[in-house]
Each structure stands twice: as structure tokens, then as C-alpha cells.
Image 1 (tube, rainbow, N blue to C red):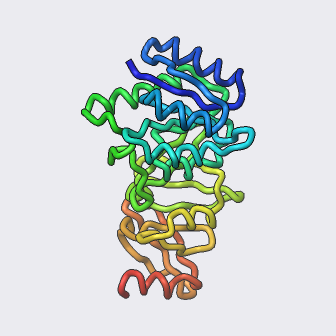
Image 2: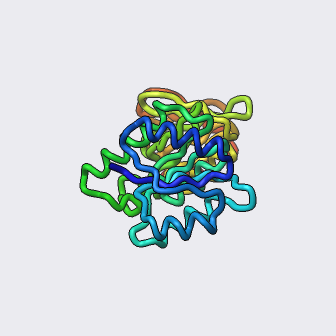
Image 3: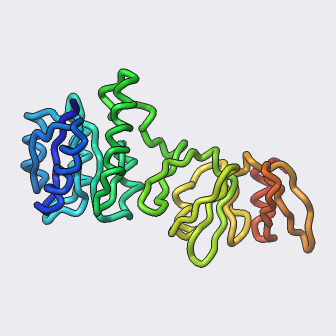
Length: 245
């Protein structure tokens, strides 16, 4: 059976999470706290497998606690359980296993527990160092879709298109609509092989199949799925440089 500790400054939220974890019959709650100082001491003593951490605490920030927990030996699995979706990227940079949004849903909590059991079945009890969940920003990007956090591999992304101050992320098999602007996405994907080729498009250079001349010294990129991405004159020189043309 898994063991857990809950950090949340809202008693009702702690009770709700405890209720759902107890219903699973897979988790034993070892303790709970409402601030970083108490949680850090008790986690060090109790050594739970999992620590469920809220982010916006009354006088603290759960991200700070997660960073401190990384220094523990063994370090516990960290699952953020919060009402705020804007911290998802920071959470995964701290190697959090999951990011669950309030109000809690029983099926969603069960999915988190299933993920933990699956990884433990591989013989990796210390999940904080497991490469399967480690968020290397050179390989994965977390994106918020509805109430789910999806870890999307960089090499899955064909291109990203801007629309109505949001973005459409296109892969070879599906599309994801996210609330980030293209400027924000460009900062997150700030390394090759991604390149801005148009005010509305960010493209993965590795997925370009053809480059077709268009009019007025512009081009169309034919992607590996046969979709087309326009290249404006402003970005032609940088594109040619990156492709060695």
C-alpha cells in the first residue's frame, strides 16, 4: 500500500482529498499539514511515498516545498493538487509526477495512483530520479488541455499556429488548443529545432518535407503530414540560414 502526506491550508480540501484516497483503498494517509515548515519536518520523519502539495498556501508556496523535498533521501513523489493551472510548467520542472486541479475528481485521482503503481512495477520506487517522468525541457513540454496536463514530446510537434491570442499545436495525429500566445510558446520552445517563420507560425524544422517558392519572395513549407505552413519575407533569411541554404 502507498503512503501519503497532504499539504494544504484549506481543511475542506484536505478532507476531500483524504476521502478520495481512502476510497481507493490503495493509500494510507500518514499525516497532513497546512504550512511548509510543519510539512518539511513531518515528511522527513514519516517518509511517505507521496506528498500531495497545494501551491498557493496562506503564507508559503508549495513550489518551494517541492524543491526542498528533492533534497530528501529518499525523496518522496510529489503531486501538486491545486486550483491554479498557471504553475504547471514550474511544477514539471521540479519533476512533479502529476498536477491535479481542484475540485478533485475521483477518476482523476485514481489515474494518478495508477501512474505511480505502473512506475513502481518497473522497480523504480524512487520516482524523483526516474527518467520516465523527469521533465527535460529539451524533450518534453507540459501543456494544459481542459483539466489535464499533457506532456508532449518536442519531436511530436509539427508546428504551432496562433489564433485569437491562443495557439493550436499540431502533431501528426492530433491537435491541441492551448491558452498561451505564440510569443509564450516560442519562449517555452526556445531551442532548435523550432523556428518562427511567420507572425502566426512556429515550425519544427525536423518535420519539413519540402520548401515551395510562393509569391513576392515568400515560401510555403510542406510538412511531413502534407500540411502547409507559410513563410513570410521577414523570416526567409533566418530559415535559409538554419537550413544551410
